[in-house]
Length: 191
Image (cartoon, rainbow, N blue to C red; front, top):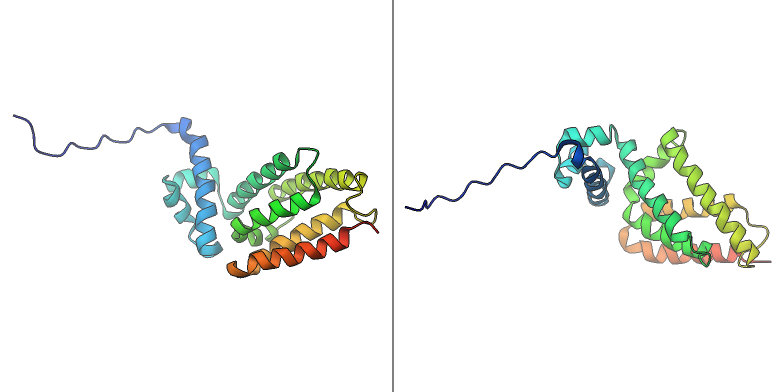
C-alpha cells in the first residue's frame, strides 16, 4: 500500500571546502543587497542569512565589515579594469561606470573611506590609481583632456562623485550625477 505521507526532504549535502568559492560570491552579492537596503546599520548576520549560508561561513570569509567592503570594492575595481581595457574607453566612460557602481555600493563608500590606511583598502586604491594613470595618459594623447589635468584630479573627481551620490537621496542621484559630470567635463577640457 503506498504511503500517503509526504516524502521527507533529503538533508542538504555539506559540500565543505568545495562550496567556499560559491559561498564567497553569494556573500558578496548578499552584502550589496543588504547594505543597499539597510545601510551600514544592517546586521552583519543579515548578510549570511540573505546568502543562505551559516554565520561561520560569513566570518571565515569576512572577519569584519571592512573585509566585506573590500571584497565588494575588489569586484568593483576588477569591473572597472575590465571595462576600461579597450583603447577607446575614456575618462567619461570611467565616470559613467563609477556612477553606476556608486548607486549600488553607496553603503560601502563610507565604510571603505573610514580607514584608507588599512592595507586592504590601500591596495585597492593603488589599483584604481594605476587605472586612472593609464586613462589620463590615453585621454591626454587623444586631446580629450587638457595638459593641466593630472591623475590626482581624476581620482579626486571620482571620489567626490561617489561620496556625493552616497549621501544623496536615491531620487536625486541621477540629477546630481549629471551636474557633477558637466562640471568635470568643463574642468578637464583642453584649454
